[in-house]
Image (cartoon, rainbow, N blue to C red):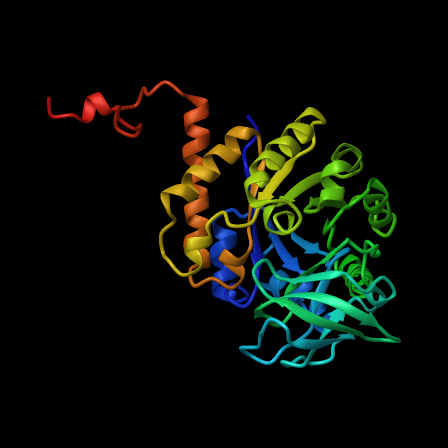
Length: 347
């Protein structure tokens, strides 16, 4: 049986020399740098900083074909019926207007489009599109915070790589980075396009996080070195109760094609603030591994959580328990294996 891989995302909580060293010591297989939350000018310094304190390989995770809002004032709440202007680029937002990127999205916007900010933020309907901006009205009250993902219905056509991605990829290659994750891989050609920008010894992880990606999962998987199921972004396009079904389907497809498959989002969500995971999280991870996932990806838990090292320790314990159980499913070592209910009863 192939050992399960552990990937973790670096961010404000973990981009510290002592934390990087602790995570490396625990045998993390890959450090992920999320380009959606890394300014262009910070890409090279971040790579240099991580490489200075660890020899764990780095994966640059692209922004990809997605829409995000720009910087916002803190605590912005948009009330139902409120008019809002949508602006291109990085204009700082407030209660009257906020920006969307990439700028090319404004070539796709049309009156009637529904704009969802994050998974539970404000919902707007586009009422008019002018040159370089759009007018909208709030149809579902909610918050708008800095750099949140935005879902637009019907889905617009977007380039598979942003200008920020292209610049970061170029600098990453020069810095020796050979692992790249393609966000919102919708077609096999998206993967091929990224691969054409990389040295021959590079590895491309295709992230399946849209309905288009699910529908094209077989050719995408064949074109990539690995696939990653981002359950969070996928849940913005499909009902939450359907995400486990899609997860199992994608894992089966990847296993059938002998392509490694990783799972991310909400693995240890409670550990963003708590030192201990929930039983439901432990059960989710065990069943995800039982389904055939080759590895697990921690995101917010290690990027912005209060307990990044403890989160990694928890995942490693769960992976170890899974691997020991599958290697010897019959409970033979009574000192370390779980006991049956009959063995623990007083009668």
